[in-house]
Length: 194
Length: 146
Image (cartoon, rainbow over all chains, first blue to last red; front, side, top):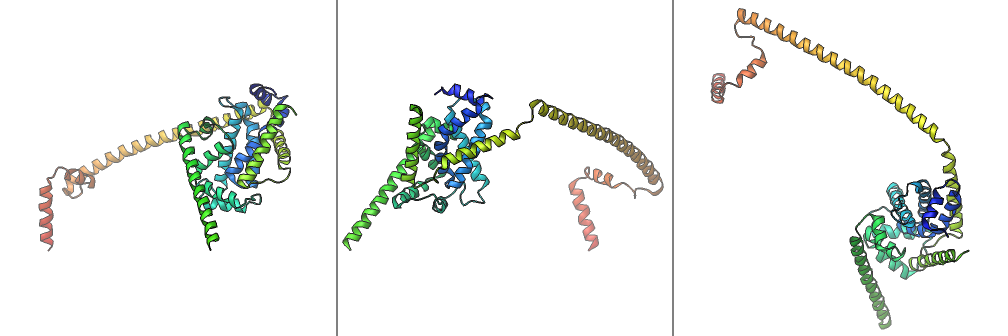
């Protein structure tokens, strides 16, 4: 495998471009898809945004300043494409950037590719209660395994702010999952007692 | 498949599993290979629409810019000369009008007294009258009318 700088050169060069772009899709398609899916929720929307993201990458690779890693740059494009998609379709679809938890969950439940059991739905319910920014940061850190400085670069926020928002999100999820578990225990005890 | 590709494959499988197991998010069968083909087709379509050579593009841009510049300049010049002509005409008209008014007023003043003093002159003169005097005048007129 060539190093990233050489790989970018291949992506820019007229002769190696197609082959390198093919490789680029293999390398990042899955990770970018899941990142987008968590932002736009439904599979159909994620599919549209993923395709647009790769087209933008193809068109814009020659302008890539290389101040971040290739993946961070692509991730940022995917993030911006998702936000643009939500903005453009906020009247057509039931979710928007400022969506409330009920809308988020409704979209999830309407998606034919959402097959959660009760516990998964509970986790989703707690996550959906976070505000939009916190949810994005939580998803990027917890599921996409990005570093704080990478999240800061993508969201154009200070690293310290990202850390604070993430820890608050984690605390919120932990305390609410405990509540859910407690409620479940109480429910079982009540059933056993009755 | 080399070691790095294998690692990537493992990571992708893990990602799919995590999203499916913890979030309940699933994908259609063979989605990623189908999606890759669609992306490549779209990119190919993009390339085909972008076949205009750069020099042609530049020439058309230069032509468009020149036409716009010429059109803009001619409009500006026409407007500017018209505008200057208008200002000159307006000034000449005003001077002639003032001259006429002054001549007429002087003639009227000598024949009919102060009855035809222009309205603007009254307004200007009122600035030099004390407020107290105006009040007295209005009160007297009101009392007379009653």
